[in-house]
Amino acid sequence: MTRKKLVFANWKMNLNSDSASQLVKDILLTINKDIDVEIVIAPPFPYLDLVSKLIEGTKIDLASQNIFHEENGPFTGEVSAQMVIDMGSSWVMIGHSERRQHLLETNSMINKKLIISASNNLNAILCVGETYDERRQDKIFPTISDQLKRGLSEIQKEDLSNIVIGYEPVWVIGSGKSAKPKDILEVHNFIHEMLVSLFPKAEELPRIVYGGSVNNENIESIISLENVDGVLVGNAGLDCKRFCDIVMKVGVSHD
Ligand code: PGA
Image 1: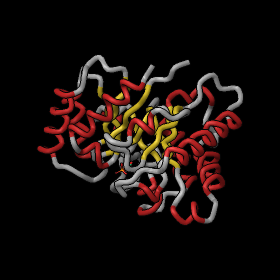
Image 2: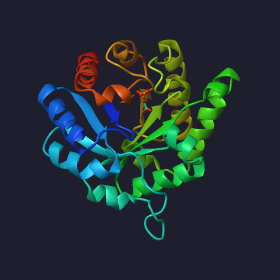
Image 3: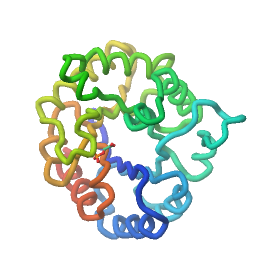
């Protein structure tokens, strides 16, 4: 079965309402409307509504960068799954390494978020990846295996088609230099094998996308790899030309 390729832009805490709307308008003017690629944009919370209105009826879908791990209640400053759905999101990012690092998100919080996103019919991208120290200490596979097992705990096989795994080696994020194709391939194959063993009866396993300094120059060497179903783009997603180049090159690679 061919799986639709995904290009997912994570804007992080960047842009303002003017630059966000300009970027979306430029992207919509530049991308080929017939391209067979799933495109998702994750703006900061305050711009969800604005972007949602701009992309209505287009082939771009909206993601929030996070949700809280409870449905509602006394959680000052937090945002629930229902709230981001209200703002037009059909996707959510869960467990990005910046949140694991700066907001101290644990695998158990991440797992609760994933369960909530599944029960609200949101598509979710579950981010996993090793730090530089874990790589140096040869702990890549134990780290990712733990993140996957705990992150996906109690997830039902019926929910898997709404889940994407984002492999993002923490040490290359924002560095301008992606991981080497052979390293990406090795980890994606490992994640694929883990998913098969965690969900032996699943008809459809989650897609696996790579993130970490993806740009319009290295995209072809990444998207052509086995078990790479798309990319998660940070920096390059803030620039119309670089982002649209990535989308078009992914489209061309898709057989
Ligand atoms: P980057 O970010 O492309 O700027 O490395 C990717 C990410 O953190 O999702």
